[in-house]
Image 1 (cartoon, one colour):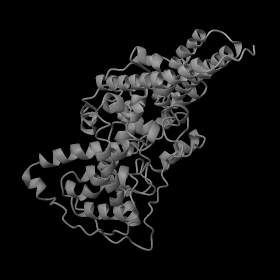
Image 2: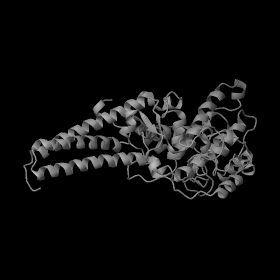
Image 3: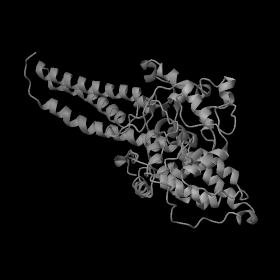
Length: 446
């Protein structure tokens, strides 16, 4: 990547509707486009294998998907499928023979006259707390993919309690909604695990429901009725993989390069604009005052500083943070791990309903750690303690929030490139503007 011409990955907007093969091809093409903008050290594989350091570690990627893009179920399912495939292929041949590969390519016809849109009515409530300082980097033409309903604790608990049924019931309901009446082969290996995956990711209204069309969902459930071989999930795998590589990962790298939240970056950007405006005012006053032309060179420092920090802030960087290679803490990082727990996690009666299949000891585990688990609650976060705490944080404290050192060297180098570019742009703009003010005749008005 040339130093003077480096550009961050462009923001990739989500395509409307459920995931499809056509979308997969679009995302694959976009992946090729972003190769030059994303160094090999920050590739999707390196991030997934946790070879990159914060703010690009696997946990940071999951945080981004949970709190910013709101589609963490894709990565959670992808991580499980990678591990499941390895364990299935390592199983004894006698067990593998009970679950032959799925070779039927023609998807099953959905039952009834149902549209291709998925009936996604699961609890996907999100909040806009992170909107104010995490989505400033997106193009203004892109709209928010989620709404921000006011979180209600009782509705949250009742929603989870209503879905707290057995895995077998969830699987039967999913198959019934798809018009599939066959019973799965229970003697096949990993059948109970596959049923849990269906109840968590594939069934309509499941806690971590994947955004699949009705036709794709029916085809996958039909395949899983016959076999537990990983090939039965190949259609979902290709879609999720393309979505992660072509949309989520480039946006995550673009977001990780930014070292400040929106209030901080807007503050720095306005400071840059203020320096530029001050430079123009000073230059005009000196021209009108009839002072010596040499005095007009004092506009150059104001232009130089203003354009430098302004251009960097336009790309999401705070030059003050960059001076020490630091970044501001994310909202969910500012209040410690305990703030990631639910605001009612110490209530015994409610805690028992937080998981559909198993009970997590939430007071000892943060939501950030739980988000990497395969099975658990939905990825909504409106009930976490940090949400209310951050919402009530004064604007001044948001601007001057705590900071932490950027550990990943590649991110630091990319930030260096952007800051150097901003300095160069500042010089290129400052020189002609200063020359213009110096060349103007004296008016002797003041």
